[in-house]
Length: 105
Length: 105
DNA sequence: TGTGTATATACGTGTCAACGAATATATTGG
DNA sequence: CCAATATATTCGTTGACACGTATATACACA
Image 1 (cartoon, chains in turn yellow, red, green, blue):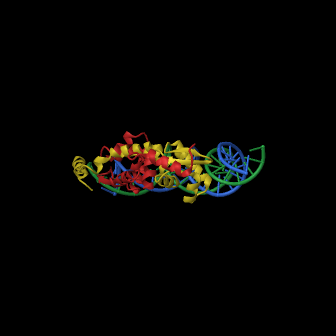
Image 2 (cartoon, helix red, strand yellow; image 1 turned 45 degrees about the vertical axis):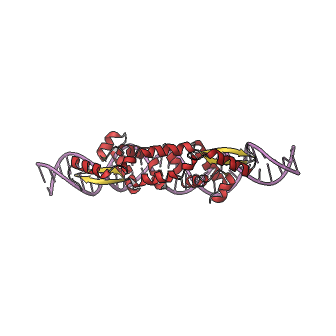
Image 3 (tube, each protein chain N blue to C red; image 1 turned 30 degrees about the vertical axis):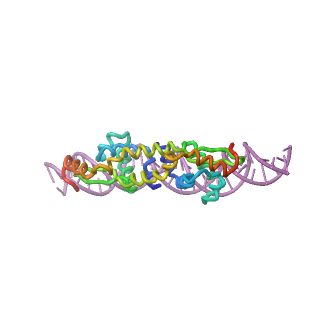
Protein backbone atom coordinates (compact mmCIF):
# COMPACT_ATOMS: atom_id res chain seq x y z
CA UNK A 1 0.00 0.00 0.00
CA UNK A 2 2.65 2.53 0.99
CA UNK A 3 4.94 1.20 -1.69
CA UNK A 4 2.15 1.85 -4.16
CA UNK A 5 1.68 5.36 -2.86
CA UNK A 6 5.33 6.37 -2.84
CA UNK A 7 5.84 4.90 -6.29
CA UNK A 8 2.92 6.79 -7.79
CA UNK A 9 3.81 10.04 -6.06
CA UNK A 10 6.86 10.62 -8.25
CA UNK A 11 5.70 13.03 -10.98
CA UNK A 12 7.20 11.24 -13.98
CA UNK A 13 5.81 7.91 -12.86
CA UNK A 14 2.44 9.55 -12.31
CA UNK A 15 2.55 10.75 -15.91
CA UNK A 16 3.53 7.30 -17.13
CA UNK A 17 0.56 5.82 -15.32
CA UNK A 18 -1.76 8.40 -16.84
CA UNK A 19 -0.51 7.41 -20.29
CA UNK A 20 -0.75 3.68 -19.63
CA UNK A 21 -4.31 4.20 -18.45
CA UNK A 22 -5.23 4.70 -22.09
CA UNK A 23 -3.62 1.43 -23.10
CA UNK A 24 -0.32 -0.44 -23.39
CA UNK A 25 2.70 1.48 -24.67
CA UNK A 26 6.24 0.67 -25.71
CA UNK A 27 9.19 2.39 -24.05
CA UNK A 28 9.90 4.48 -27.12
CA UNK A 29 6.27 5.59 -27.25
CA UNK A 30 6.59 6.83 -23.69
CA UNK A 31 9.90 8.53 -24.41
CA UNK A 32 8.22 10.53 -27.17
CA UNK A 33 5.24 11.46 -25.06
CA UNK A 34 7.19 12.46 -21.96
CA UNK A 35 9.89 15.09 -21.73
CA UNK A 36 12.54 12.90 -20.18
CA UNK A 37 15.34 10.75 -21.57
CA UNK A 38 15.06 7.07 -22.43
CA UNK A 39 17.20 5.81 -19.52
CA UNK A 40 14.95 7.65 -17.09
CA UNK A 41 11.85 6.17 -18.65
CA UNK A 42 13.33 2.68 -18.41
CA UNK A 43 14.34 3.27 -14.83
CA UNK A 44 10.92 4.52 -13.80
CA UNK A 45 9.33 1.58 -15.57
CA UNK A 46 11.54 -0.77 -13.62
CA UNK A 47 10.49 0.83 -10.37
CA UNK A 48 6.85 0.66 -11.40
CA UNK A 49 7.33 -2.99 -12.28
CA UNK A 50 9.03 -3.84 -9.01
CA UNK A 51 6.15 -2.20 -7.18
CA UNK A 52 3.76 -4.40 -9.14
CA UNK A 53 2.04 -1.49 -10.85
CA UNK A 54 2.85 -2.50 -14.42
CA UNK A 55 3.61 -5.61 -16.38
CA UNK A 56 5.76 -6.12 -19.49
CA UNK A 57 5.23 -8.01 -22.70
CA UNK A 58 7.86 -8.56 -25.37
CA UNK A 59 7.23 -7.63 -28.97
CA UNK A 60 10.43 -8.09 -31.01
CA UNK A 61 12.91 -5.64 -29.52
CA UNK A 62 10.13 -3.65 -28.00
CA UNK A 63 8.83 -3.96 -24.46
CA UNK A 64 5.15 -3.21 -24.14
CA UNK A 65 4.16 -1.97 -20.70
CA UNK A 66 0.63 -1.97 -19.34
CA UNK A 67 -1.04 -1.29 -16.03
CA UNK A 68 -1.68 -3.95 -13.41
CA UNK A 69 -5.14 -3.59 -11.92
CA UNK A 70 -4.69 -5.01 -8.45
CA UNK A 71 -2.76 -2.23 -6.68
CA UNK A 72 -5.25 0.34 -7.87
CA UNK A 73 -8.06 -1.81 -6.63
CA UNK A 74 -6.35 -2.07 -3.26
CA UNK A 75 -5.96 1.69 -3.10
CA UNK A 76 -9.64 2.02 -3.89
CA UNK A 77 -10.54 -0.40 -1.13
CA UNK A 78 -8.35 1.44 1.32
CA UNK A 79 -10.18 4.65 0.50
CA UNK A 80 -13.47 2.94 1.21
CA UNK A 81 -12.48 2.89 4.86
CA UNK A 82 -12.66 6.68 4.80
CA UNK A 83 -16.20 6.75 3.51
CA UNK A 84 -17.63 7.81 6.86
CA UNK A 85 -15.59 10.97 6.50
CA UNK A 86 -18.00 12.28 3.90
CA UNK A 87 -20.87 9.88 3.52
CA UNK A 88 -21.98 10.05 7.12
CA UNK A 89 -22.62 13.32 8.88
CA UNK A 90 -19.17 14.30 10.09
CA UNK A 91 -20.42 17.52 11.62
CA UNK A 92 -22.39 15.75 14.29
CA UNK A 93 -19.39 13.65 15.18
CA UNK A 94 -17.21 16.71 15.51
CA UNK A 95 -19.72 18.51 17.69
CA UNK A 96 -19.79 15.44 19.87
CA UNK A 97 -16.03 15.50 20.28
CA UNK A 98 -16.14 19.21 21.00
CA UNK A 99 -18.53 18.62 23.87
CA UNK A 100 -16.30 15.90 25.24
CA UNK A 101 -13.22 18.08 25.18
CA UNK A 102 -14.77 21.34 26.27
CA UNK A 103 -15.43 24.51 24.34
CA UNK A 104 -14.30 25.23 20.77
CA UNK A 105 -11.67 27.58 19.40
CA UNK B 1 -3.19 15.05 -6.23
CA UNK B 2 0.54 14.25 -6.29
CA UNK B 3 1.04 16.36 -3.19
CA UNK B 4 -1.60 14.23 -1.52
CA UNK B 5 0.11 11.04 -2.64
CA UNK B 6 3.63 11.97 -1.60
CA UNK B 7 2.39 13.25 1.74
CA UNK B 8 0.51 10.06 2.53
CA UNK B 9 3.32 7.80 1.34
CA UNK B 10 5.55 8.65 4.29
CA UNK B 11 5.05 5.78 6.78
CA UNK B 12 4.62 7.86 9.93
CA UNK B 13 2.13 10.13 8.25
CA UNK B 14 0.30 7.10 6.94
CA UNK B 15 0.02 5.84 10.52
CA UNK B 16 -1.19 9.22 11.71
CA UNK B 17 -3.90 9.17 9.08
CA UNK B 18 -4.95 5.68 10.11
CA UNK B 19 -5.34 6.89 13.68
CA UNK B 20 -7.20 10.06 12.73
CA UNK B 21 -9.57 7.94 10.68
CA UNK B 22 -11.05 6.78 13.97
CA UNK B 23 -11.62 10.32 15.14
CA UNK B 24 -9.88 13.56 16.17
CA UNK B 25 -6.78 13.30 18.34
CA UNK B 26 -4.51 15.65 20.23
CA UNK B 27 -0.79 15.75 19.54
CA UNK B 28 0.02 14.06 22.83
CA UNK B 29 -2.47 11.30 22.06
CA UNK B 30 -0.66 10.65 18.82
CA UNK B 31 2.73 10.75 20.50
CA UNK B 32 1.60 7.99 22.85
CA UNK B 33 0.15 5.86 20.09
CA UNK B 34 3.07 6.20 17.70
CA UNK B 35 6.66 5.27 18.37
CA UNK B 36 8.19 8.59 17.44
CA UNK B 37 9.07 11.72 19.36
CA UNK B 38 6.80 14.70 19.87
CA UNK B 39 8.73 17.06 17.58
CA UNK B 40 8.43 14.54 14.76
CA UNK B 41 4.70 14.19 15.31
CA UNK B 42 4.27 17.95 15.24
CA UNK B 43 6.37 18.21 12.12
CA UNK B 44 4.42 15.53 10.30
CA UNK B 45 1.18 17.15 11.36
CA UNK B 46 2.35 20.44 9.93
CA UNK B 47 3.14 18.76 6.62
CA UNK B 48 -0.24 17.04 6.62
CA UNK B 49 -1.88 20.37 7.37
CA UNK B 50 -0.03 22.19 4.61
CA UNK B 51 -1.11 19.48 2.19
CA UNK B 52 -4.70 20.07 3.27
CA UNK B 53 -5.13 16.57 4.66
CA UNK B 54 -5.90 17.57 8.24
CA UNK B 55 -7.33 20.51 10.11
CA UNK B 56 -6.63 21.78 13.63
CA UNK B 57 -8.85 22.94 16.43
CA UNK B 58 -7.65 24.49 19.68
CA UNK B 59 -8.67 23.13 23.04
CA UNK B 60 -6.79 24.90 25.84
CA UNK B 61 -3.11 24.13 25.23
CA UNK B 62 -4.04 21.15 23.16
CA UNK B 63 -4.34 21.05 19.40
CA UNK B 64 -6.93 18.60 18.16
CA UNK B 65 -6.22 17.29 14.67
CA UNK B 66 -8.77 15.66 12.41
CA UNK B 67 -8.94 14.49 8.83
CA UNK B 68 -10.10 16.65 5.97
CA UNK B 69 -12.38 14.73 3.63
CA UNK B 70 -11.79 16.46 0.31
CA UNK B 71 -8.34 15.13 -0.68
CA UNK B 72 -9.45 11.58 -0.03
CA UNK B 73 -12.52 12.15 -2.13
CA UNK B 74 -10.33 13.46 -4.92
CA UNK B 75 -8.10 10.42 -4.70
CA UNK B 76 -11.16 8.25 -4.90
CA UNK B 77 -12.39 10.10 -7.96
CA UNK B 78 -9.01 9.75 -9.62
CA UNK B 79 -9.15 6.02 -9.08
CA UNK B 80 -12.54 5.93 -10.77
CA UNK B 81 -10.76 6.71 -14.02
CA UNK B 82 -9.04 3.34 -13.71
CA UNK B 83 -12.27 1.43 -13.41
CA UNK B 84 -12.02 0.12 -16.96
CA UNK B 85 -8.89 -1.68 -15.86
CA UNK B 86 -10.92 -4.23 -13.96
CA UNK B 87 -14.58 -3.58 -14.56
CA UNK B 88 -14.44 -3.92 -18.33
CA UNK B 89 -12.80 -6.82 -20.11
CA UNK B 90 -9.17 -5.79 -20.32
CA UNK B 91 -8.14 -8.95 -22.09
CA UNK B 92 -9.98 -8.06 -25.26
CA UNK B 93 -8.42 -4.65 -25.26
CA UNK B 94 -4.95 -6.10 -24.91
CA UNK B 95 -5.46 -8.55 -27.70
CA UNK B 96 -6.58 -5.66 -29.85
CA UNK B 97 -3.41 -3.75 -29.12
CA UNK B 98 -1.34 -6.84 -29.82
CA UNK B 99 -2.83 -7.09 -33.27
CA UNK B 100 -2.04 -3.44 -33.90
CA UNK B 101 1.58 -3.86 -32.92
CA UNK B 102 2.24 -7.13 -34.62
CA UNK B 103 2.69 -10.60 -33.21
CA UNK B 104 3.06 -11.43 -29.55
CA UNK B 105 6.06 -12.64 -27.58
C1' DT C 1 27.42 -13.31 -38.00
C1' DG C 2 27.35 -8.50 -37.98
C1' DT C 3 24.80 -4.22 -37.82
C1' DG C 4 21.16 -1.35 -36.34
C1' DT C 5 17.39 -0.59 -33.31
C1' DA C 6 15.21 -0.88 -28.76
C1' DT C 7 15.79 -1.09 -24.06
C1' DA C 8 18.33 -1.61 -19.70
C1' DT C 9 22.07 -0.72 -16.37
C1' DA C 10 26.17 1.68 -14.11
C1' DC C 11 28.19 5.60 -12.23
C1' DG C 12 28.92 10.11 -10.23
C1' DT C 13 26.49 14.27 -8.67
C1' DG C 14 23.15 17.15 -6.45
C1' DT C 15 18.92 17.81 -3.94
C1' DC C 16 15.46 16.94 -0.69
C1' DA C 17 13.39 15.32 3.26
C1' DA C 18 13.47 12.67 7.69
C1' DC C 19 15.63 12.25 11.93
C1' DG C 20 17.32 13.42 16.97
C1' DA C 21 18.49 16.93 20.10
C1' DA C 22 17.96 21.29 21.66
C1' DT C 23 15.22 25.23 22.05
C1' DA C 24 11.33 28.36 21.33
C1' DT C 25 6.46 29.60 21.59
C1' DA C 26 1.79 29.31 23.32
C1' DT C 27 -1.77 28.65 26.84
C1' DT C 28 -3.59 27.84 31.27
C1' DG C 29 -4.04 28.25 36.25
C1' DG C 30 -2.17 30.10 40.48
C1' DC D 1 3.25 37.80 36.12
C1' DC D 2 5.16 32.94 36.96
C1' DA D 3 5.38 28.11 36.51
C1' DA D 4 3.86 24.13 34.23
C1' DT D 5 2.09 21.83 30.38
C1' DA D 6 1.40 21.23 25.38
C1' DT D 7 3.01 21.99 21.01
C1' DA D 8 6.04 23.99 17.46
C1' DT D 9 10.49 25.22 15.29
C1' DT D 10 15.51 25.23 14.39
C1' DC D 11 19.86 23.03 13.27
C1' DG D 12 23.17 19.77 11.60
C1' DT D 13 23.57 15.28 9.73
C1' DT D 14 22.47 11.46 6.86
C1' DG D 15 20.30 8.41 3.57
C1' DA D 16 17.46 7.90 -0.43
C1' DC D 17 16.53 8.99 -4.93
C1' DA D 18 16.28 11.45 -9.48
C1' DC D 19 19.07 13.09 -12.98
C1' DG D 20 22.46 12.99 -17.22
C1' DT D 21 26.08 10.68 -19.51
C1' DA D 22 28.05 6.71 -20.89
C1' DT D 23 27.80 1.99 -21.72
C1' DA D 24 25.85 -2.65 -21.87
C1' DT D 25 22.48 -6.04 -23.33
C1' DA D 26 18.67 -8.01 -26.28
C1' DC D 27 16.67 -8.87 -30.59
C1' DA D 28 15.79 -8.87 -35.69
C1' DC D 29 17.09 -8.99 -40.23
C1' DA D 30 20.35 -8.93 -44.06
